[in-house]
Length: 105
Image (tube, rainbow, N blue to C red):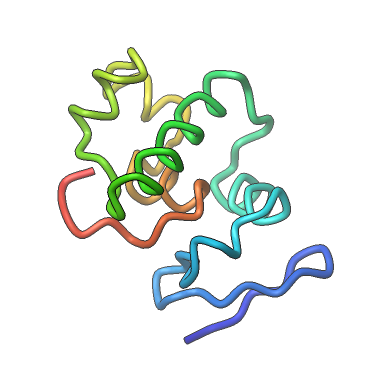
């Protein structure tokens, strides 16, 4: 396990850089991932996806499949990739503080 320190906060992450504990998510984590993903600014579109991912994870204990994400947020997969260049699993789920998805996200 590795540890990342950013703006005075420390985060335990897995080998792929995902938070080990969802409860450790905070705005500083979002800023850290935003910078590492090359995203200039978190827009309301980004936030809508992040909020959905976090709510879904809290209710179900897993990340949603891509089609569930698209259906519930109204964003096509292409739009999700425009917002999160590394994709819904690596970029969006990581930024939302979810563990690394195991399936097709």
